[in-house]
Length: 224
Image 1 (tube, rainbow, N blue to C red):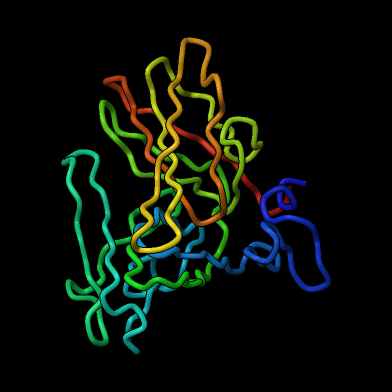
Image 2 (image 1 turned 90 degrees about the horizontal axis):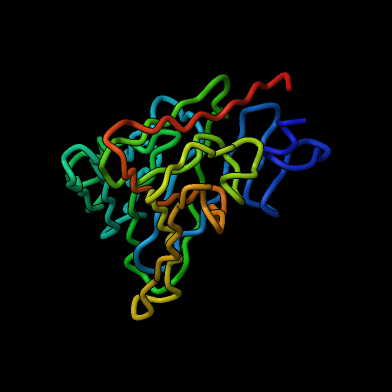
């Protein structure tokens, strides 16, 4: 079943995957995402209520995310929009979004990993992530899954063309231990080595080398 591929094996009260990182009853649940010290690429492959704004996903009303930094990327403008946790809010209001399929940078200012929890509904249907032409796109799977983005039956990324590139970020383990990228470049026959989305709740850079949009289509139905 695709649902078990998406969220793992059926438990007594929940569906689980990635060890204890993903939990769901039917298609509503939550994911735990570990934010390492320093810069992390994060995603939220769930539809949250009332929305996927940072002020909702990362509620700073108690100052939990004070001095944290969030950077969303615009491929069309080629620029970031940044927000910083202050006192009991986000400095710019936390209106930036982290919708399924989007990814962003999240900076953890401490030397300790922090687990954040995203709650929501698993997207369903035919799901299109449009990768802007001639641009770097900061993206993730729309669905809460991980692994080989080409052979994973849910991600099924097969629309790459020659010279397209993927950059997967591995965060560091402390503020003085910066992370690093693993780069994948497509040839005429596809990616010689398939890019891997390491865990649920992360993302990657995708460079669309053509002058037309690349539509990454994923499909999932709760009844499958």
